[in-house]
Structures are given as structure tokens and as C-alpha cells.
Image (tube, rainbow, N blue to C red):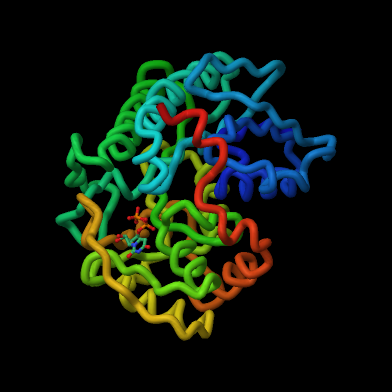
Length: 327
Ligand code: UDP
């Protein structure tokens, strides 16, 4: 039985990974400090004999007893609103956290996969973005705390691979959506669906001509699983190349939710990338992977999830545990 450590396990992606690895017959050690993660996402696994939850911040020394086969590092605030609120923690988990986990991987002779991001490309001048594009990132802007932590994360991961022979895998994740996203995390999809459900207007930032390409979470998890089991140690983009402007996306959500609300325009956040679309040739070639779920299918499942949440969730302004971390 493979023993897997998943960090950020109570988050959106981490919790879906826990489900997948349990389904694959692994023993899962799930770690989270619960700043942005939520126990609700994994409570169905509590009591499973192959699942063990550890409340811990991986920016501090990480101890795990026994053997480990795989480490998947998914702990990090991951929405612009989150990392603006907790910038130092964002920098620490991508740098110190990754360092601690690479040390653990080395000690346990485990294979480690890190969650990197399309944000390493910044506001890209090459479109769509292939893995060999080095990016256009503002290191001192508000997004710099995330982008540069993730770039450092890739650098230290390659260093451990080259210098210590640790088996490493790097995934660059593009915009992903699905059930268990936080309704109030500020990302565009929960923002629009939450607004529609509350009977508010949909807030498009800027003129809405910026583009994103949205991948359904099950497709992403399949890509992660395939990359982990592959022997490829350079970064691989995983995302859905189906690109759309944010204005068009707002129209799709209006149609999906049958809301009578309209679109209103707000200021574009600083350094908001103007376009984003993954080039997934590498994933196709090396992993024989490509996304299967269309946006129409994925949005319907995700909307059904958000509809099932309580009134209290729908109107919650912030994530409670933030407060103790904001100085
Ligand atoms: N956005 C928007 N309205 C919102 C939230 C986000 O128009 O209420 C825009 C945001 O400016 C960006 C895009 O939607 O251009 C995607 O934002 P998100 O925060 O989901 O992720 P990003 O891809 O920017 O990291």
C-alpha cells in the first residue's frame, strides 16, 4: 500500500486529491493549517482507516512517522484575494514550506510533486503559454508574493532534483474550477455564481476583455495522477485550452443561473493578466492527457454544488480563520 502525504489537503484541490488517492487504494496523510482550507471538504474521509488528518503549517518543520512514497505539495493560498490578505504566509509556504517538504522527501526517499501555477508566466507576452516560456512577472506587485514564491518553489525543486537526486514532478496549474471552491475566495467563478445566487449584479473587472481558460477539477486531478506516475521531472502545463473572455464568461453564468441581474464593471486589479491559455502539447505527448469535461458540463455540476450550500455559507463574507493570521 502506497503512503502519500498531501499538503493543503483541506483545500479545493487537496481534498479532491485525497479522494482520488483513497480511491486508488493508498494510505493518505492529509496535512493542512486550515487558514484557507476547510474541514468540510474532507470530513467524509474522517474515520476511514486509510486516512489520517494532521493539523500543521508546513512552513514549520514537518515530521511524518513511517515510510512515505509520495508527497504532493498543494498547501498555499491560491486566489488573488487570499494572497493579498496573507502575503507573508503565501511567500513562506511556497519557499520555506517547499524546502521542508523537499527535505522530508529526501529523508524518506519519496517522490515529490509540487503544485506550480500559470502565474509563473505573469502577464504573458507569448500566447498560448508553453512550458519553455520564462514569463513576464512583476516581482514587487501585489501578485508578486504568489508568483515569486511559486517561481522559487520550482527553482528549489529542480535544485533538490539535480543536487540530491530527489524524484520530483512539477505541474503548472491553469485556472481550475469545481465543487468545494470557496464561495467567497474572490475567484471569478465563485464570485459570479455567488452573486447570481444572492441576486446581485455580476462584477466584471476592467472591460472584461481579459481571457482565461477554465479546467474542470476531475480533469486536473487525472493530469496530476498521470504526471506523478510518469518519469518526467520538468514542468508540465495542465489546463483546458478552451479560452474565453471574462465578459463572455459572465454571460455564460447569467444564462446558466437564469439570473435577471446584469453585469457591472469595476476597476481591473493591478497586474491582472490580459490573456491566459495553456499550451498542453507536452501533457498530450508525455502523459497522453487532455481535458475531457466541457465547460458546459463542468459549470452545471459546479452550479449544483453551490446551490446546495446553506444561506449562511452564501452570505459569509470572509473565512473565519483568516482573522487570527492578519496582523
Ligand atoms: N474577475 C472579475 N470579477 C470578479 C472576480 C474576478 O472580472 O468578481 C476577473 C479577474 O480580474 C481576472 C479573471 O476574472 O481577470 C480571473 O480572476 P481570478 O481571481 O479567478 O483568477 P486569476 O486568473 O486572475 O488568478
